[in-house]
Image: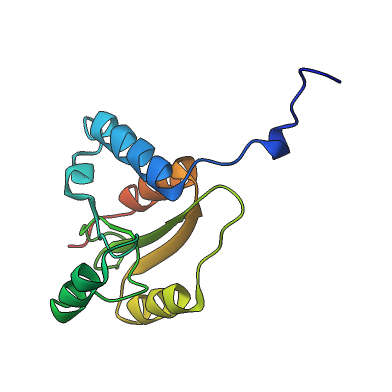
Length: 133
């Protein structure tokens, strides 16, 4: 039918757009969850000039580190690392999964979230856990 476009034909938002939406939500939600003010992005991804990439690597930037972290202790965890992905058509790389496993082994809660809404729900669930004494 002319004029009808199937939802599956519409490309999902980029990871960048998902992340921007998540941080807009976090800004709004920090009124009831003030710990969201500590949420930050770890800028490891993206295309860069070769010279910039070399400098960042020398400065300690590491491939596969998860995208987001609220350094807030909850439920016996030191903090929470989130790898944020598009809602569809994307998955965590082996390197990213390896980081999540290593971080979990060090006492961090970890998750791969598909879309900002899933990440927002994961953050809410995490922040509702009992705070560490």
